[in-house]
Amino acid sequence: MTNGQGNETAMTGFSPIADDDELAPGTVVGEFRIECKLGRGGMGTVYGAVHEVIGKRGAVKVLRRELCTDQLQVSRFVQEARAVNQIGHPNIVDVFAFGTLPDGRSYLVMEWLVGQSLRTRLHRSPMTRVEVRDILGDVVRALEATHAKGIIHRDLKPDNVF
Image (cartoon, rainbow, N blue to C red; front, side, top):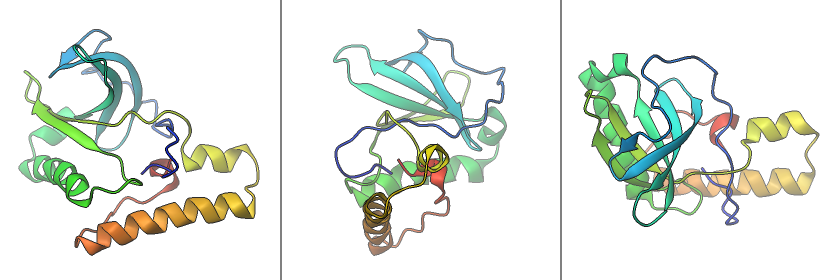
């Protein structure tokens, strides 16, 4: 989720687990060239990338190899991309591409959020009432839009709020 104020924020809060299948900088995924690794979560690894022709920045989320052999997990990954686009809300990250790597791993391309997660912000210093109100208001509006489409988030946590 984004903070809804047009501010870009960073994807942080991923565990620094090494992955033999990591994509090297310069690797082309669809129409995007990988620039760097942003982090790794339970479902996969997220990379910062740039569109080769128009220069649009994106975050490429690649599903972990072991999950790609489980059709249920792949279906959930596809459903994640579809659900985000059904909602279409300014407080929810936009997914704008989906595909499969030559090795069979699925990926999606979404907005590249630059800044900090709520988890990082919580560790920095106590938050003011205004900050808490603004952040919770954005989260509530995003959840209202999500629930209005009959979708349940299932992974709402400080790492996923930006």
